[in-house]
Image (cartoon, rainbow, N blue to C red):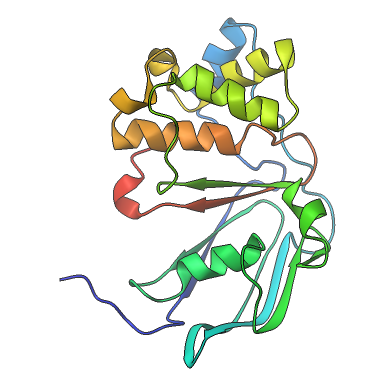
Length: 219
């Protein structure tokens, strides 16, 4: 059976990456990109002092239930940070708070030196979100879906084609680029969603939030 746990039972987990990279492509993937005349993703400048995300005593209550209860953590440049917990622990609510989809009962949220929810629009220009629970239009191909989202992010024409080519190669989903997303496996859809999340990851400080179960992560 799946444990339900109690609200607020979250376990932060941090993985340190090289301080100049937000994503570490495999060596053979970099070679494939260069053979195609494409560049690997440009690393983020992680030399800035301070933290990318700083959460202090974050609490969200729904009536008498504390979905998130006094959560505090920080994420430094170049870190991959995870929240682990059983069903009902508050993982989804925490991500919703970080994206400004719901307001906290108390506590503070700072992302990229900006304050949520006061600076929400400025924050959302520099973050993105990948989730196994988001459905892409099933009658469009992978490439068509990514073109639509690239346009929404203001990336068009040759810049969009180049960016999409880089991401398809990086996440090793090129072979399915012209298949409709309705024909893809869950693992392939996870890769497409990650491509979407990195479309606007330009060479400035950026944050990508990912909401996936372990079962869906077959990268």
